[in-house]
Image (cartoon, rainbow, N blue to C red; front, side, top):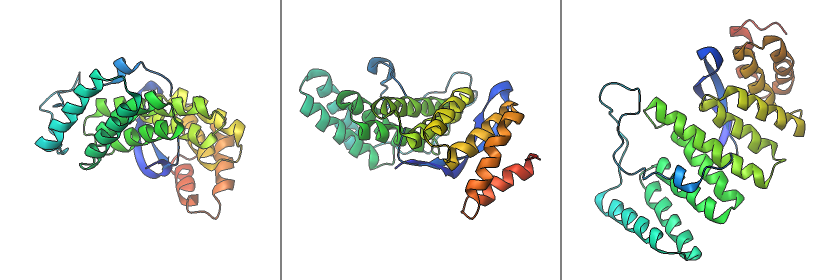
Length: 251
């Protein structure tokens, strides 16, 4: 599972409270470090209303059955009692597998993040970020979507510490930042990605969109113009041209 900027249409929050829509691309990669004790939550526990929400919190999210839930709780207790690294890795793998049975990518992401914090392996950080990001489509609570998007950005950032020149990964981190409401930080990441690859279509287009929606319309034009050139003849051409047409961007 991976983030590709063009696979979904997602609402995001930017400065001045403006709501924008950006096509986000599911790719292979993507932020830096909360302490594990601050991050970890038992996501299989019953979810309560997010702060500021009103009304009953209803969800069709499937919970693990009683046997899987009991095993997950048992593993969590065993994790607290062992310092054996190999055993912990195996335990995290089992938790991930059990959550995956129910498409509970929030639980898989939580276990995957803790696994990555233990191994500090690139693939583990990327997997954690991908699971958190993919969960955004299923999470019904808006405040929790921001939470999981920020966790995805955290995981991608940690991956970037290992491979800082990976412009695709940096573009994916920007996607997670946008989804978490951090458009300005996303723009900074996209500019860094373009330093590595000035012809990266996703980075040019999304940076142009973000700058436009943030009110920096003059600055956005060069990136949108470049994205038009790069998208010509591809399956993304229609997306780029539609945004420019709908927002009356004068290139």
